[in-house]
Image (cartoon, rainbow, N blue to C red):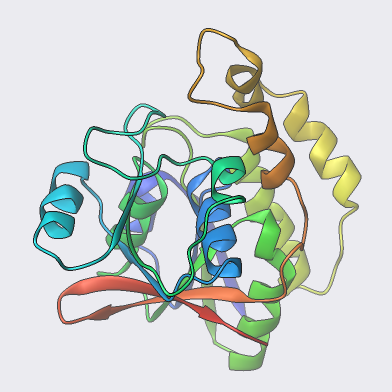
Length: 230
C-alpha cells in the first residue's frame, strides 16, 4: 500500500486512491458526534452561502457549520463538538459547511476513488475500514487552518493515521501532548473568542472514541457522508 501524506486544499485537490480528509478542530469531530447521536447523513458543502441556499430550498432539515469559527447567520448550529454532544440529531439530514474540512472533502472528490472523513475520534475505525478495502494507494490530507496554514492537530492526526495503516500504534497521550503545547489550541481558552469552547478540545482529542467510520461519496451532484459501522 502506497501512502501519501499532504496538507491543505492544494493537496486535497490532487489526492489519489482512498483519501482521508482530516479536520480535527472541529468539523469531522462534530460530524462524528452527530452520527453517534442519530444523524442519517451529512451533505458536505464548501461555501456557507451555498449551504444556506441548499438548506432553505428544503433539501435537508438541519444546517451546521462555521465561518471564522462562528455560526453564520441562518445556521441552526455552529461547529462545536461540545454543543453537538447534547443535541438530538435523530434521523436528521444535515448540511455542513466549514472553512476547512468540507472544503477539503469537496476538493478531494474530484480525484479520489473513495473519501473518508478523518479525526482522532474515529481514527482506528477509519483505518480498519480502509485495511478491509486493501487499496493500492491511500492519501491522507491534513486540512489545517483557513486553507493556508498547517495546524498541529491535523498534521499529527495524519501521522497517527499513517502509523496505524502501517501497523504501528503511537502513544495517544504523547500525540495529545504535542497538540496541546502547540498554537492551535490557544484560541479555545481565550475568553475573547467565545465561539471556541475548551470542551471542544476535550472532544477532539478523544482518541478512537467511536467504532464507526464516515465515508463520503457524490450522490446526485452533492457530496454526502454516511456512517459506516464495522
